[in-house]
Length: 313
Image 1 (tube, rainbow, N blue to C red):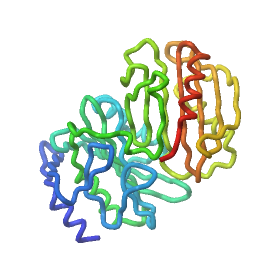
Image 2: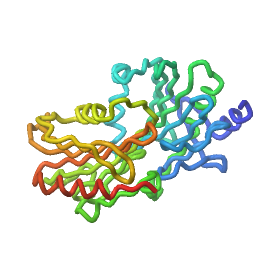
Image 3: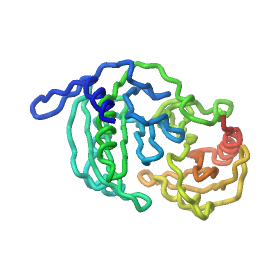
Image 4: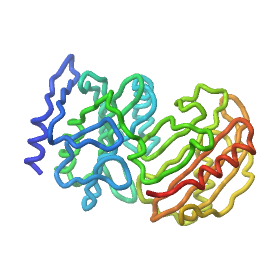
């Protein structure tokens, strides 16, 4: 472990400019590219490619490095990096540092979180451009300080290739057909795919019909899947005016629940309709969410067709 730590320190240079750390990384043979992203880093010794999220994990210790690509300018998303916002997510912030990584503004947050009865230390490194924000989450059990040093060092070896052409569909373990039903691929974020009428995010069309497919990051014990589905829908950023139907469904051999509901946009009071399917598999779940602000019945049928095209690879 110590050898790997020394190696990683050799591959990035740290200087201080007006009290702010400036990190300059070069892409090396030790860097491993995270498929479907523009990020490469040198993972700690004993960490392997994660199966349920973008990044690396060490299953015996319960430690991980997870990457999120957020569609939004860093100048805006970074405003949410406050102690109060992290606390609302269950993270007690210990330290917030301003950095630059290869010339890009960055923030490194160190915090502590309780999850499933265990205490974890988290490092959250975020940086980006006016087009996207990269967030790298490192987590490890509080008592494993040496692994924590490895994780922090690994995160700081990150190398970002803004012009790299990526295939977002290689990051997910499923296939879905939205093109046939008039929706175009717009954006990927971790294990999710978003489709809109014009293929833009945010959509520039008056028709705000969208379809999102995502897979949960970690295994969570769910006792009542129907109640979980209803509560998951209620957490969406719109008001549920009326749930029209809830029924059991099976797609690609996975059972779950389909919910159709009328919605009201909180800011504009515009009425809409939502179609949600959650499929439960091995303590993980897939969620499909179609939203529309027009031609409700036609678009609900479209959403049903797209959902039933879902197939695991």
